[in-house]
Length: 512
Image (tube, rainbow, N blue to C red; front, side, top):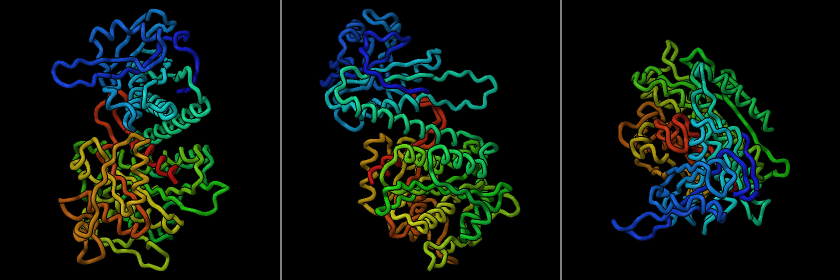
């Protein structure tokens, strides 16, 4: 979708559809309080065109509520679409206000798609507490994310994409700031969709080798340094945990390494992004139930998030060094697959150390194995700060549902930067606990550590497993298993891969 920014007057724009946002300004409470919707625009002609229906009570400006007016009086637009943000008192002047605007832009795009309207013009909302540049960035992100659909392989696919999106901001004083913010939002939205496209691919189309190829193609396009290795390199690096997952598949693994190194930055932190890239997960010998196993193509969503984030980083050009490692493999149950009770030796966390030994309790707890070697390799490549993302545990979905993703950290200062990033990204992560008690649950009688700690606190014991490989390097772990796939279409985003993590990781990187 082509995205543009315009500063034209709203009433003079000739278009199939003009969208404007509205909010409920009612502050009273109780059964007698009625919604008081207002349009968030300074254009009196637009306000007049919608005045009658807004005054009728038919439209309440609820969150992502829509109202379509045909042939609006006083405007050259053929249709006027009004999209609600909800209560202005809770949506204005706060970080979640911008997220409401982001979702409203996605809602507008998705409203158009089944109606065959190929162009959307949306007015930048104007309200006290809504910062123009932040809204411009969010609108660009939301519109692009809203345009994505998962029906890639339908033989008679009807292309309902919106071909052109224009944000209109009449009367803006600082046009350069708005242009920069809008461009940044478009880059991030495109990168989130890049990650979603990877997650959406079926396992027979996106093998570890193909994922490596796609990562390399993206790296060449945006100017990242890259390497993609396979079995021989895993053995050379003594990545016994990663290889243990790979050994049961006919498909070879892929060790994907991307580097972003600004020419004028020679010192300071090196941020290491590590992603789980299990392109299909049967569970291995500890095989999963048949129900919903087809979704296990999404088990590389953490790796896809890191690739999407690196794409955005390369284009946004922050002044900090970043490297990404994606450990891609299939987890399959053939005669060479690892078995419960096996002991594997992970890659050493430093050249002068011995690799930790891991007792395999459940072969379906494979993501933490590949991440263990990925974290160690990132450290050996010079990462001073680590962040990993993975669809790691079903337990995180039990704990937090499909609303929040889980976040763990061994360093409060590093996590504070991530919390600040969430206020910009609008994504929902909830910090979960680490602790010695969880580490005790994964102590092995035969080796150093077990790959599962039992039924209770599964997300926390999985995080403590990774903590053993991050050690004292500042580190954040994102468990996105409950939120990386959307089971039902929402007004602003399609059913399927969500691309969660991309926006937050990008903002975390930019904070350095």
